[in-house]
Length: 152
Image (cartoon, rainbow, N blue to C red; front, top):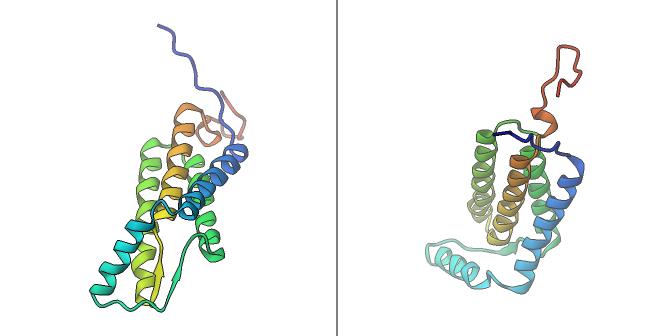
């Protein structure tokens, strides 16, 4: 049984592709209103619990797009630059926790942060880059000698 090696992976091209696709996915979900009902239920439940929201923030507003873009591109870059599959899993879960952690942080300031579109975008960014890194040998995984010359 022969073991075929994984093809060499790239960094820059998947970074831009996965980053923009996940950003556009989250933006499309928010623009089409696919998560409008769960967002409304979330807001009403918090207002019933005593929170007072003076404004709202999130996609498709400019600030929400910028925060989501930073998060998506950051997750993709971190996953593609991490050599271990286990560490890539931890990156995915911690990025989701940080994304959902923005919601109560903004709520304390009286700002309703719409977390669902960004959460979908960040999850898709992690998932697509994780699958790509799983099936490719990334530059951070390549073996090198003491002088930095690639051995593979």
